[in-house]
Length: 169
Image (cartoon, rainbow, N blue to C red; front, side, top):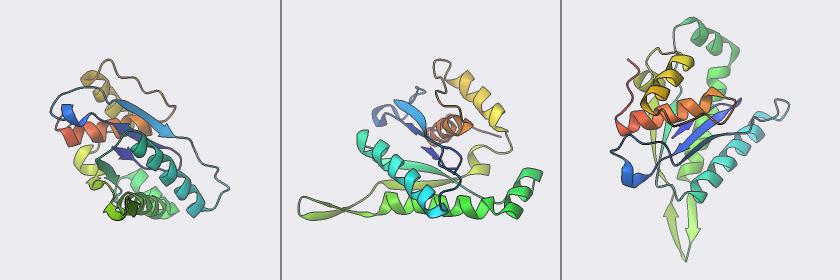
């Protein structure tokens, strides 16, 4: 599961054999923050490459990604005005495109991972990042957020939602 962001993209890898169980992710983390002075496309490509490495390392079969959407609350309006929403949509599109790209292997072409977009208001509702992290901590008391970003916790929340264990409403 992936929570995209140019200032921190969180990810969590889940054990497919335990998809119906409330268990910690096999591993979770965050892509290191990119340099704000790099061109946008380069920053997004760096994030896509880092996620690609995680997916290959863990033999990922399916990816759930938070789908950006316009929110009419104060922060949502500010993000839309500043162009952050457009930037996030670009990054999400690049991640999805990277996941779907055609790969060559053993004389035949095979497509990438099965990808699902999960709208932010569907999995998280209006919960703040802090409240999400709190609820995740209640569901998974042995899980710890190892990065300095809330994106890792949100990636875990998206995964828990996809597994049927998290409801942000």
